[in-house]
Length: 363
Image (cartoon, rainbow, N blue to C red; front, side):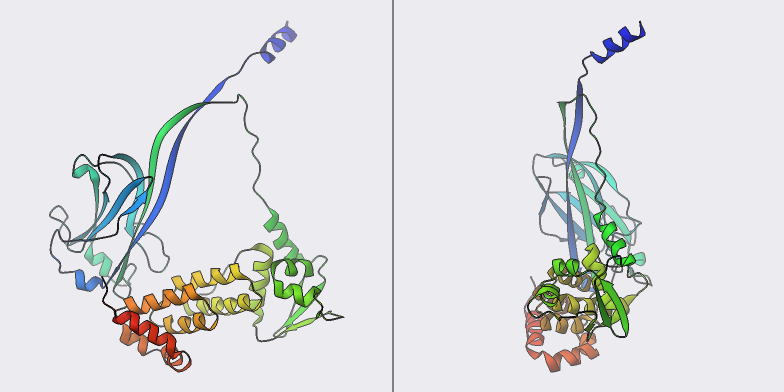
């Protein structure tokens, strides 16, 4: 009887269906230069971002320096507005000011759920009010060099879809762990076949991996100009810590943890790593360094970073530096830095580009 019941169960037809809700995500960053010049615009006066599209719908961000008639006293306002007509949109979003130190929206701004509808004014807008005193208080978190950044992450929830599926579970495939194995190979130095001497320190590595990641290493290790014995290669003009970070990237395709470095020390390390990436023709690493330096610009380091970008043909980083100088209200402070003096002496044409862009009227 038990066998009969088992056979019957095995012949049972199993059907299944699934309800799936689709979503589309997008982020818009609204940068406000010259915040102090906009503080006295008046209640209900605002500046608006360009219209941007997320999930097939048009949106914009409005910034009220002195708030609205509905805002509490002493508060400024930020408004997310649905611009599309005849639309009703279910969303999950996060709107707020960006901390200059981390590039993230401040923890005081919590995620929100809202159905936006263009049928009525109240339904098509969401207002967030922020105390001006908290914005301008020391230490400064959100306002730097008279520059304010508003960030909005929007997730548009689409209509649910129900469809038939197979009556069995999908077998989950674990994520790739090849990078962990390669990192372990670098740490253990197992079967390493080449040694480098850098600033008095030695590093062991694997020639085939170096050649795979860098055409320069490939030429040095396997090309016609390779050294015959090649028991120990000397790397000049590079710090041991920089070469160690370079090897970490070669093996793991990621930057090492630099949390023990702060401020200028971290930027200096990234500058040296950019130079190393350029030397060994490692384009991805070079762009990653450009990205970090571009996000770390301030009055003190922008001139130094611009000179580096010009020297190593980092055109995008160069444009970011020039834009920073052109939009900064602290040009006198930039001029007073040592980096500016070096830039003026070594790259006068680059400096002219920055000054010309700053002199153009901003729309």
